[in-house]
Image 1 (tube, rainbow over the protein chains, first blue to last red):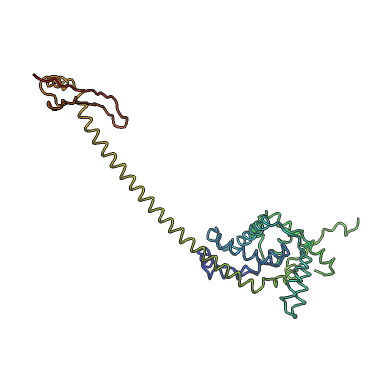
Image 2: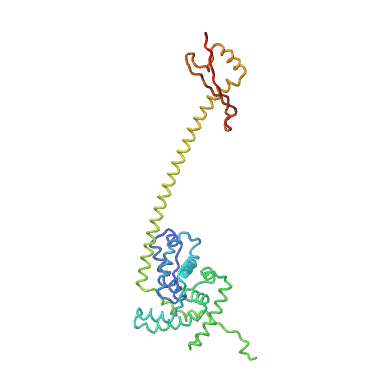
Length: 184
Length: 154
């Protein structure tokens, strides 16, 4: 779950304060990384896009309208634009999440976390079978704890569509997990 | 139709989905990348601050240059206007003299003896004169010019 940023930190962020930006990075680096990784399935690209999103936020945050309630949606909306811009310049390659996760986790995870790594790989395999928009709605809602309104603002989708994606995603995820032999 | 066919697919509860996906929270960028991100942000912030400072300096310089140019222009216009006003006053005096019948008569009378427009008697060259009427903001209304010859008195 994300740590909320209060209005004083937000004011400092808009003034370009380094300490405030360190708080922003600490709060959002993992959620943004998961957003990109679950979307494209490319570990290195996800890291690059996360860094690029923060670089973009340095420029754009001083002009942000709204308070702390809008910050999370603003950050993820920026992330979505950064990803779109990247893929306009270099079209996405179809990478399988499975192989990337195994590669990424094999070198960086300690041996006592292998089981956990396998669980994550299994989960990602299941989630990757969802439609990309449905997948993002499910992940942002149930992993990052977004509200319906935040989802609508971040993904630029109507709330009705978000609710429909949520329902469809949960049912589909249940089916996928049953096919994989897991019970929900 | 069986009872099972009529049942809508039941969606799992939000809590169970949340618990199921919780291990995904372990996904995070490598420590090296986390350090890189912080360095990148610090660099961008410094660049942004420098850019803001330089752009404000340029803005100040531009404003001062523009103000100086405006002052020069206004001074120039003022001086030009003053000089033009002086010309008008001289021309007005001349026009009054040439248009006034009384003064014409006086001139004619004087011509017989001494004319103010006539050059000195010992000047061998004929005198040239121009009379113009200006109206402020419009320009020349009428113009009259000619040579004045002086009869040599025997």
